[in-house]
Length: 224
Image (tube, rainbow, N blue to C red):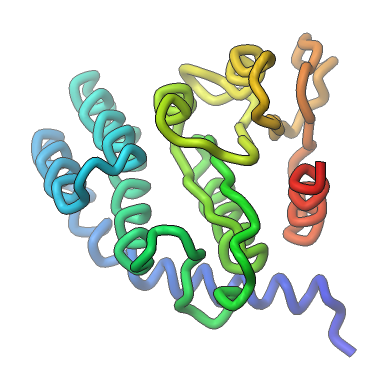
């Protein structure tokens, strides 16, 4: 019999291929365009969604990176913006997890809202896929820590998962900033706190995490 872990990984890979197919063409068209065009595209995508805070934050990240001349960071933020807009447009009530794709878990009840901040595109995308498509959670993913505190001013989440050593605002800094809040924070790192010379005040999850390990740890957080 095929183990649960192998079945899970197969479902995640299938969902990732489907998402890559849908995003690929639009993102590829933006590879070599001027930075000003990236900003125009960001505001064009953002303009189709009235007062949606997450898209506003991501559009701001695109514009900030473009002004700093950081093309790669601007493209990563724009890709996240397009991905989030696609997710929202597929959800009539803006609440249920994505229903399309072979690994959909749309019949499951909404389990909670999770915010991810990670500058590693592959890790961010895979984490989001596993939690949405298999876990049934509603997930918002940002490519940096800068927009997290701004987003939390207007939106509530049940868990924040942040990379420990992102450029700019790191997961360790987010952990410290949210120490007095009710929001559980999990910091992801390939190193131990001791190796980074820090004393964690929140959950510390060592990379790499398998899909089932991630789901198990998130479930523990959601259960209190």
